[in-house]
Image 1: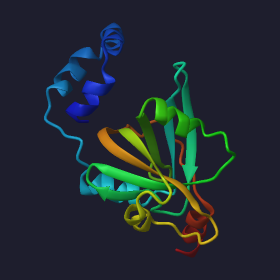
Image 2 (image 1 turned 90 degrees about the vertical axis):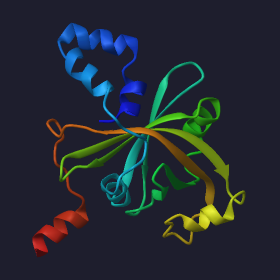
Image 3 (image 1 turned 135 degrees about the vertical axis):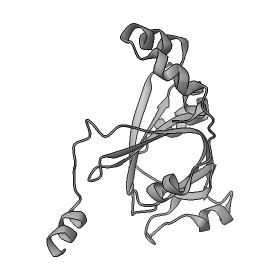
Image 4 (image 1 turned 120 degrees about the vertical axis):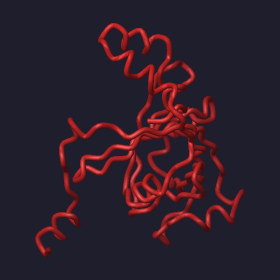
Length: 184
């Protein structure tokens, strides 16, 4: 847990609930810990191995929206230790996440490793870059599809992150993971 995380997540109403349920003293000490928004090699490796994530945005009317994104392992590209990016392809045409980011660039991402029961939460400010506006960035993205055209790039400027406890994560396995276990 880092100080940026506690600064973003521990609002006054959250602190009030921590006090009510007896965890405030422990988390108060964590707020004074040293931290940064720089992803370590551990987070970078974890991100590069993911084939999906969940991203939350908030609409202009204050309602949260959660979108699942998936692709080949590594489709989320680590640009540097504070910046992530992924290619966004045409979907159902609703553009809810894209519109929400246009209204407020604040996002929250959850990346899961179900077999290892690991969960990484990331708070980021997102920028939408339309296809063709930054060819160099588009070329850096791990896109394994020649048939799909990138409609936009989502650039994520990491502001904070935190690892969750594995206690309530149910292990789940992909077909590839099951196949590897059978062969191994």
